[in-house]
Length: 168
Image (cartoon, rainbow, N blue to C red; front, side):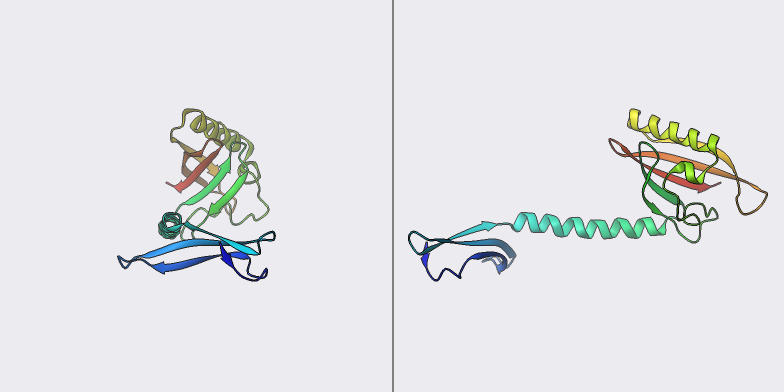
């Protein structure tokens, strides 16, 4: 407890240099106790939390760089095939996805039979918690050719899958 004006209340985070020369983080909370006119100061060491947060951020940036280097199309979808996120690199020979900004579901991009097959493989990979691979032939929307693709379905959580589309 310390004496001070009522206006000395609030919270902040402070960074200190410890005796070992490492940074330490502390969450400081100051509350005014009206009955006594004192402030209650609490200090919580949040160094481990902050260090973990920094490692996660660095790791996230590294994974983003790796994903950008992959020339394939990546979709993060829910169990119903709804797009949660996508990654498309301009070097890919297979432009579906980014070329249709209104697409919200696998069924919006791929012909009926193909989308049903893809949805069944999403379900299979989620139920088995295992990667599933399927080769498919898809009519190219840009010309009269048929595209040969490999689709990989990888569980990314209990109800989400990563779908990797590769032109083979």
